[in-house]
Length: 357
Image (tube, one colour):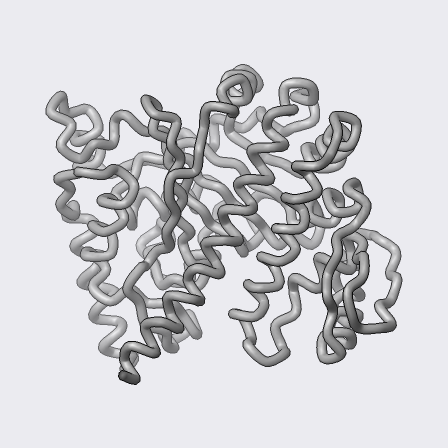
């Protein structure tokens, strides 16, 4: 009975994260419909760095195999990064609070999403092991993509990175969001405004009462960052979901003028490997895309302290988790883990045992 309760709690926590991801992608898709009008605002002149993120030989052989037993060749795989940047930096030095793999079925238009938990213990792309979010900090999108390809037997060579200041600007452009603030949250929300304002340059307006009220961009983003009330990071994820759902609802109701204001505010804070021509192509097809499913990696995991890496999410049988990922993304795949993934799996298991997790 206790085991079933734990599984239910884990399932609920996982779903909270997945709903937040789905809403985020809904927001992105709505915005992309209008990107053709604002292409000059995005940073799209960085393909060279992404090409340097390689795939291992076994993956390359499978992608090029006419039999296509891994079912990867019919998909476009994209890395989506959300960085906690304090100075507008979208490259090396920024840590990724959000890491999402988006896999587009080129034939059906179905999109599957998989979040890689930011504290997941991985080979960070240079044969050292640490939390997944440290890869971007060490080597920017290049190393972060290398990490995903190395650990997960993928062939990603495209990415989109956004600064979390974008959330502040989107909410302000939409006129704020309605949030029910509790008495317990007020002091933490106001404290977080101080640090967030130092990053964004926005003016602080303190929240003075509890209850349902309109929060501006700085207030709502600070609300998303609260982690010290009951529920810790799980409650933090719920707050993020609440804010993103409010943003999605407002975007769906917004007129063209309002959406253009959002584009003006956000796209200077986007870094991507897509060329302008590719953005036009995807935007033209955006109405035909649909979110088919979503998941998280690792799906079967434990948490514990992994030496100098600190508190981490650790896969239980890493290779099996990668196999499950491929089945999720690519359907009836006949995938078997590469030698690289098997070696990583053995290393993670050894380190997990050594640290008593």
